[in-house]
Length: 368
Image 1: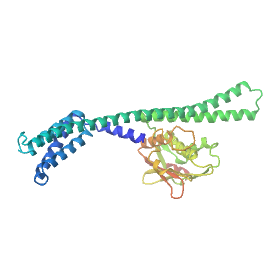
Image 2: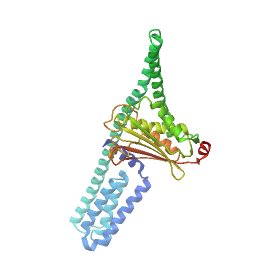
Image 3: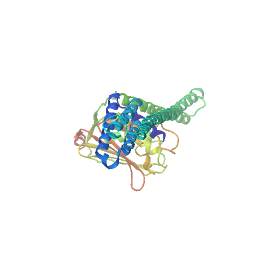
């Protein structure tokens, strides 16, 4: 509910009309309803026209500022008096009853306009409050998540380093290797988080520059998989790349980050024994990369949000900053490509990357 309220608030700010346009809308609305009333006057009488004008003023009060709304109330009363109340086409009111009706109409139109405007102002204040509360919760969640993701590898590095320095004589060679492996793993995790934050900053600032070169997709996939050797666990990994696939002109480092984030997401959100399938294809001068898994897939109501910055699926285990898929999307789009997500018919999810790029078959000629 809060998210929708904040979105509505942003849209309302975006659709804010200038004073000139508000006055123009007021004049056109009252004139149009008055014109319609003139056409239908013989069928419905002048009292019904008053209700039509009053409804028009109420609708304008929902969207315009207070001064144009008050102008609408005054103009509608004058139009009703001049065009419809007998004697018509004069500001003279024939009977005491009609004078009372005109006075009551004018008062009701003003009060109704002001009350509607005030209600809208109160709603806007509520929306602003909800937006601030949502931003505060998002900041707290992000801060806690980032603190965890950065503090954990730093703590591991410091602890292992301290053991190596203070207990060097007591440690066996196997102990030293284990500590060094922990330091290496934690360092890579820390480096990955810092890269994610830097890439997000570059994407948002527009300062990201691609360094394209001829790229062997097999090398790209296997290089990306190296850091996962100790974290795949029981996940069953399958790779399908045609032998005759050409070279593609890409930014190797950025595409490695894209694949890393997708694979990491698959490992994090699927059961320990789930399968992960990576496939590469060449279709119509495009590189097509897919990462599929045999997990539970994504909730249908959340699939359009998974690429949002800092978004994390509900009821997922702790860990992660919610940046991985957002960065993957940004890096793919920086290549001029697209990334899409869909659930597979039986189970699992499928990420599909399509990047239009130059191709070269020189690599195949060398292999022959």
